[in-house]
Image (tube, rainbow, N blue to C red; front, side, top):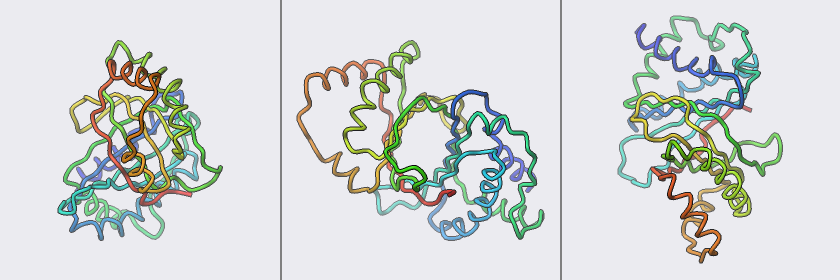
Length: 251
């Protein structure tokens, strides 16, 4: 039981002590059996309370929970993605919190934590830095309901060129294509997987229909767009492109 609590404490604080600089984001993936989903979501409210305390204390900027959309109806597992955002001010904040959800004592939290962590059959955590993006949302509105997370493997010697192409060429194109928001992030650290991904791009949409419609459209590309895609394909490989649905978030 103490080992489980130690692991959970480690994961909670994984990016609180991150380096100074731009926005840093922790992306924590956990896969559970479908038979545990109902109980898992009930218990999740206690941990959301912990993130709320941290946000109110200025230790983190945002927390979001997403679910991987699996195209196979026969799947027996569900994967959740927990995302925490840390600004430079958050990382400099040294306030101390008990980390105890309201209405719980230490013994009850220990039991709940062990039960919640026992649900996970696979975990993966990665820290990334925000390199740039855009947001067409009205300030203060809820997050987009759907996200496409694209995992990239970029040639080590071409990373500066890759970032420049994404931000100067492809970000404006994405903005015109009706995305609600878009972001480029660079991997800083990983736990639980072979280290192939070193960049993520995140495409945010209001509906799943928008994603499928865009993927279904087979429009003729201009020569400039073709040339830009061929150029970036020489320095990066798209490893995966996964769709996620928003489950919960902090206001």
